[in-house]
Image (cartoon, rainbow, N blue to C red; front, side, top):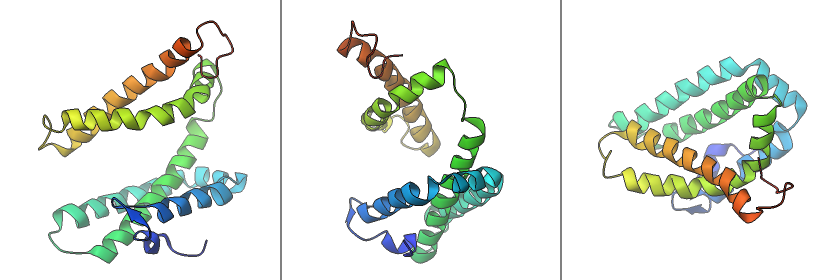
Length: 175
């Protein structure tokens, strides 16, 4: 795991997405970021990593969209920095603010895999549906379909287990 992430971007790329890069991120998260010490460090430095991640994300957007120049290598490095620091900040913020238990979190915990499996279908459908409506508005083209997709996915994640297991109080995802 010593190969820097930006060098993996073009390996086994399918449709512009690198299978090797995402597998590398998965393995790193599984073996390193699942350690309690790493999670505590991410929680301790959550605002620092958030600041660095936001700055790198803004630089990435500027370099890729508005600079008018070709900065392939720099853009790849800045994108990787944005990915890593935002991921670390989200782990730290989640550790501090979302590490709670209750009825709602128990329900969401039980239905998280179903939500994960369903959400992408709805995101793609809503993105396609709204692409003509918000063609010139990038922020709206992202926000409106994602909000709609997550609302429909949440409904599906709550309703589907009731349809599949109508009489069972022990349904795997029933809330």
